[in-house]
Each structure stands twice: as structure tokens, then as C-alpha cells.
Length: 280
Image (cartoon, rainbow, N blue to C red):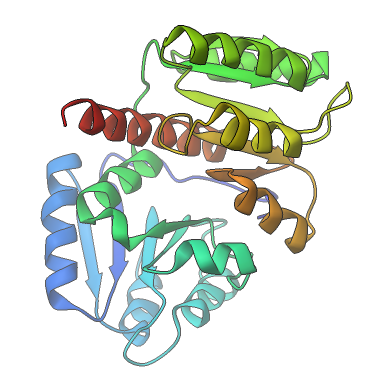
């Protein structure tokens, strides 16, 4: 996703459009969104044609669309939004039951801001949408950050700390693995999120970090969410990162809202899943 021309629209009354052929799905999402965002103006559309008309009537803060619509493919609607709507940028989230498979095969359009797996449920989707429209900080959230460029590390660390996150910065994969191994061996909870670049100083890369964390140390995606920052636009290489165990990717140049939204979302979901596991 290109960050060029990004202008996230801030309004006192966020307007969220949900495009889904199911009336039941639209109603459930609306009810849950109103709990998250009481001031919300909800625009529900059954078809792509309805969405096209509504998009031209006024500012929209965010659009979610199903992939299969009654009159067109959801990606066709996404491409229309990017080409014809008057706003500089509208975050677009594709909601589907096979997001992971399509992400790994890179079948989805670069015009999509983000993807959401329907299997996580409508409540999680409402929280996800709120993260884009009204992101809330998580004071005390812990991030282990791997970056070998001092300039990039300072800028990114300030960005994260501004949102109440506690950042531990290391320069190499070897340093990160040593810290995580101690957490694992001591039975101490690891940081909430691991944030890493791909190409780093030392013998190991971000891809090696994914392999070691998932296979050798044994943290799964809920125990330690991993977000990878990459400047590699090659679809095959991006797919490989996801298959190796990345929870999500952030494409360089880094856009602050995209990074913070993805990171806070992974932090919240990880905590929720760990809490459920601990109560069993």
C-alpha cells in the first residue's frame, strides 16, 4: 500500500460504510459499532451500486466490504473508490472468511488498506474498525523492537511511546532471541508485540527471527504477535513472511496511523486470546 497522498479524515461524527449482501450481517455490525462509537453515522449498503452512490454524497471515514457482493466483486468496488471518489484517501477494509489464504497468495488488491478475517467475529471487527476511526492508546503495552538503523529506531520509538507504549529496542536478531529465550525459560510473559525489520545487522534476518520464535522457542501468534516492517514490494517475499509466522506486515515508508493501528490491534487481540487461554 502506498502512503502517498494519505489524508485520514478526522470528524466529530465518524461516517462508516459497511457493504455486505447480508442484512443480518450489516445489522449486527451496526449494533456492535454503535457500542464502540456511539456518535457513529452508519451507512449500510447491500450492493456495490448502492455503495457507489453513497460514496459520492459526502465524506466517508472508512469502508468495509465483503469480497462477494450481489452485483459485483468487492475488489471491483475497491478499485472504483480509489479512482472516482473525491477524497484523497479512504481506509478500505476487506472482510472475508479466507483472508489468510488470499494474503499468502497475494490475490488481493494493493488498493486495500487492510484485511479482516471474518472467522474472528463481528465484535472483533467492530474493535478493528474503531482502531482506524478512533484509535485508543494502550498505556503500558510492551513492544520489543528490532531495528539496526539508529535514525529509524529513534523516530519509530518516539512514535510508539507517544501512544503510551513501552519500547525495548535491540539492534540484532540475536539480541532479540536472547531476551525472548529468557522470558520463555523463566515462564515470564513475553512482550505484547514483537516489531521487527527484515534486513538487519548480524548473521540473522527478520525471516530467521520468525523461524526461531515460532519453531525453536515455540511462541504462537497469540502468545507473541509479530509485525514485520518491510520495504520489499515483491508479493512472493511478502507471502513468505506471513507463512513463516508474521501476524501482519507494514510496508515502508511507514505511515504512522497504519503502524499504530495494526500494532494496537495485535496487542489487544493477543491479550484477549491469552486471557481466554488462562481461564480454561
